[in-house]
Length: 154
Image 1 (cartoon, rainbow, N blue to C red):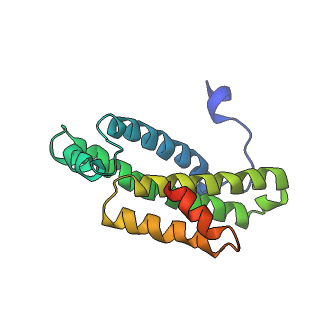
Image 2: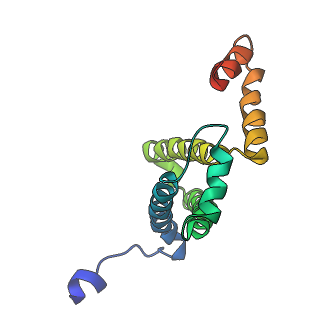
C-alpha cells in the first residue's frame, strides 16, 4: 500500500496551487448533478421560466438548497478556473501550445455555458444580461444586426 499511494514520484515544485484542476472536476460534478435535479422541475418557456424557478425554491423539497448550491457552485467553479489559469500562467504552461490552446477553447466554452445558465431563469437580470451581450454582436460590420436578430430567433 505504501509503494502504491505514498511513495509515488512527484515534481519538486508541486504545491497547493496544483489542486485547482481537481477542484474544477469536483465543482463540475456538483454542477452537473444539481443541474440535473433542477432540470427535472424547470420549464423553458419564456412565459413560465421564472415561475418555474420560484416553484423550485418554494414548493420542491430542498429545491432552494439545490438552486443555491448550483448558483454558488458556479461561482466556486469560476474561482477555481481563474486560479487554475493563473497557476498555468505563473508556471509557464502556455509554452505547451496545443494543451494551452485546448484550455483556452475550454475557457470560452465554459463562459458561454455559464452565460446560458445565467439567462435560463429569465428574470430581469437574465433578460437584460442577454440583451446586452447579444447586442454586442451588432458591432460586427455588415452582418451584426442580422446576426443579433437571428440569435434572438426572429
